[in-house]
Length: 262
Image 1 (spheres, rainbow, N blue to C red):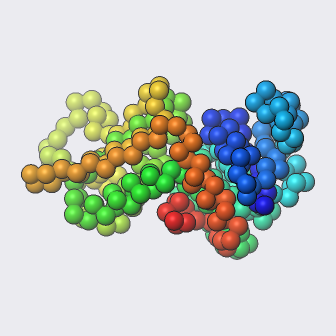
Image 2 (cartoon, rainbow, N blue to C red):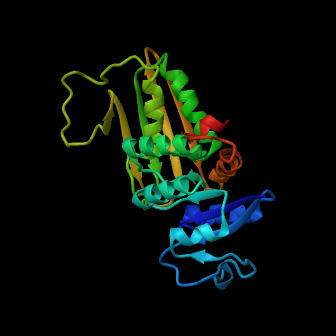
């Protein structure tokens, strides 16, 4: 059994991850973390009347249950601190919180290598989304004219999404560098053309009712190609989270992107 703690268990993704761990035959939920929760045990909450799992207020308290894996769905600042703490204490992090900087990712990766601690930070845990990114990277070799439209719920904190940034990074590895659009193009309203990533445009949509959706739109002479992925429910991410929990305990460093484990 892999002993797991979930940080951010009261959020929508954290709650879904908590239920996944409870239902998984190979996992044991040994604790959850939320500094603002007044209750001391999950069985004091209406959602978990029969679950005897402690609720911790501080990172240090988590060490008492000696978890193997630390699942994190919090916010960027907290996720960075939590991940660093987990690595320092030889707990393998599985992080779905997006918004970490390149410098933070590099620092965490270097520290994990030094301590030989496996871990995973992924902008998207849906297997279909990972395949979408890989297909887009392949297409970018032949279609350098491309734009990304990503659509999420209106409570998402970061824009563009981590998935969109990761997709653009992967495409930039194989794509011929070029600036898209007319050379004399003028934006009548600033930002109308979206964010600029090495000549590729990224557009972020934030609307209630959405979960996580991304469309990669390619254009060529006389043809077009659209690659799209939709997550209609947060359960779509749990296959990847579970896979990450199973794999990270056998790694000796932190990796970025679920594709590294497929």
